[in-house]
Image (tube, rainbow, N blue to C red; front, side, top):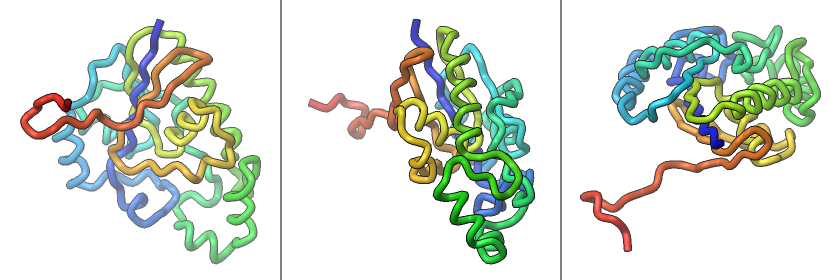
Length: 196
């Protein structure tokens, strides 16, 4: 039994553009158009999920996905930092930001730690991995980071070393307990001829 999980990060929002902790703003109009243009390239899936945030729900809709909200895919709860930029928080609480970025168990904002997020996402992935076939999920960038770490068995300290751009597709394949990370599409030469 093999499970394939394709995770799609949300389209660009004003908050993402300004490095602002998510404040439930909508995706940009141009990003919705871009998402719609890529919809036909998505794999067919037996299960389709979406993080509960506005940006993920709007991205799923722009992609033409009929997705079920999944609380296990919720973004990192940054508590009282929500709606602020990283620069604003860094200026007001430099020691707290440094501790948060260095220690996966720290939650100086009063929300969820990176460690707790990684554990929650790992539970979701392992449960999802019990089902055969393909799952597609539009999920927050930090959720995708946590999936990558879990699939690779990487330490939580690597969390901030994984970049997840808007509308990126990340795939893990395998089954509960053993995952492989699949990077990017296979490149083909112009005209569709196969490479030697």
